[in-house]
Amino acid sequence: MIPLRLVIDTNIVVSAALRPAGSQRTMLLLAMTKPARMYVSEAVVAEYREILARPEFKIRKGLQQQLMQLIVSHAHSVKPSRRLQVAKDPDDNIFLECADAAQADYLVTGNPRHFPKFWKKTKVITSRELMDIVAPHLIP
Image 1: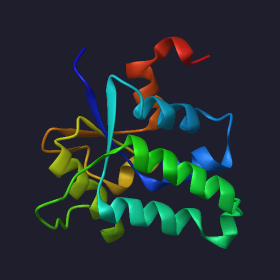
Image 2: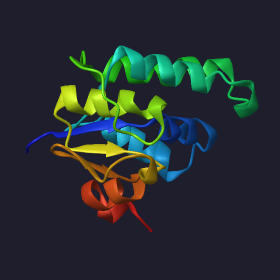
Image 3: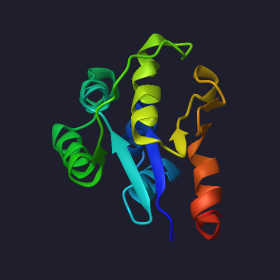
């Protein structure tokens, strides 16, 4: 089976931390399980850490550390070779840069309107759309 190359936006990671039984947590775990491959860059990992630690989310430090350890140990790291100015929110360009470097099939986000529908060969989709693709039998 051909691996599915994925980049995951921070809002999915935060949702996974806030709702243990939610579809974003399931999707995040699927993204780290063969045949899927999750890709991150240093900037993406730094963004995950920073946002998960925000006091308004009230995510326990232990959970933050567990989630980051899981991501760092299972995700494949890439080094983007160029800076992009494509996303509506300039802070989101790091995900397109990562997707570009990883030659990702999908960039998964809760805010698809912040991104173009496609960036080169990467399609921007929601976690629900990814679940429909990789595990339609898991969706009630």
